[in-house]
Length: 68
Image (cartoon, rainbow, N blue to C red):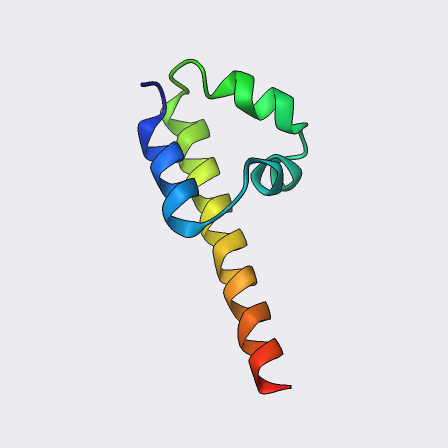
């Protein structure tokens, strides 16, 4: 399976395809197409960083909601 690490991170961090696509400035459909074939290492690293940012933002949001 192409881009296995990206797919695993999305699942593990509970980040949706549309969230990553939005962060990358592309449509969800484009992201799904990109994931069909192995991406360059640079693009994979960029996606992994974006996934991390989204996951942290979601975590902070949940913490804020719990405090209120």
